[in-house]
Length: 453
Picture 1 (cartoon, one colour):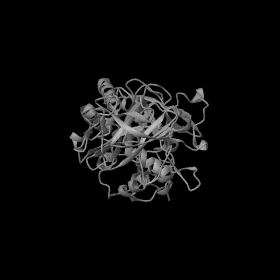
Picture 2 (cartoon, one colour):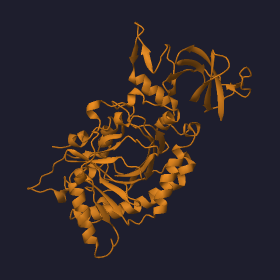
Picture 3 (cartoon, one colour):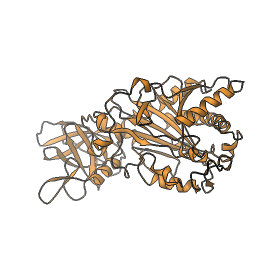
Picture 4 (cartoon, one colour):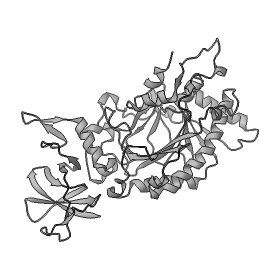
């Protein structure tokens, strides 16, 4: 419900108001001392009253006990809480009247607003908030990927997987997993219609009005579903330019009513197809190691799945931030579908290689746990997503396969340890691994190295 909220003029660029709303562009009324700001009502309450004094007879004032401050900075606008002192441009005034940067406060204000990165884009910003800006030394080079690297990531055709072609497919996947840790697959058995519908549904959710999405915004996973900007928003040194729906599938199913209806059916169908494909891929990976085909299934690596649906809207300053920073995946295996907007890159030696979108293909990569279990026969490699410079959003949906028995000990399989190649990692529980993973920001291979002897 779009309403108009009357705010008292305070000073250039700062307006103080009372309300629980998400802002849209301001516009001046006939009274130069009043700004009428288009807002979206999130939670109507009994304290809502009709305001009859503005030039717009149907405008509403939301009376709430929490004060907010509305910031305007060269097209950058969003709502933030007031904590006892005047803040402008998301900074704090010190005793000398100078503006200082308080990242913790700014991040909390952004997260509390529940508008996400897409809400920032919709507000018409022309520059990104400071907490999204990464240090220059960590940003990607502007030079293009060398042509010799443009087709490094192989594409494996899974057709004939139950025929005498299987040995060829096993060899191709084994080599890609050992050398690169990444590959794409085609003819995998999931209809293109399922992939397209899932991408479209996730895109549709993220492109709804902010007041609709804000009902789902939150970081708790008690219901098996969450929607937020960056799971590591409060741990990272700089935020990344994306919004994400996260779902937990497996032995404990998510609360299906908590999944946004616009993408509920599609994400559930995605998980059903991915579960079957995951079993096939794990059999192939086991055979490539000389193991029984069901070994990873025996370790319960199929039973817990986390699906993350990433939405990367247009970024007005893509050279200053990332879509996702460099990292490796913690689980056994990741299966991803992406739309036609690129940006995914894999580290290959000292270079970064583009993973080009291929219609109908799925991207597969080895996770940290499988690298450890295989005693480095398979590789979990760093990858990242560049901030999106295009008007059209990048959309991807990834499913992470994790073991369900989190208190069991994991380490190199005895079958893959010998006098010539001793165990390279100590044993640990998967719970220990995940605790360390979620207690820090995404930062490359530092976590897997922690478990090395």
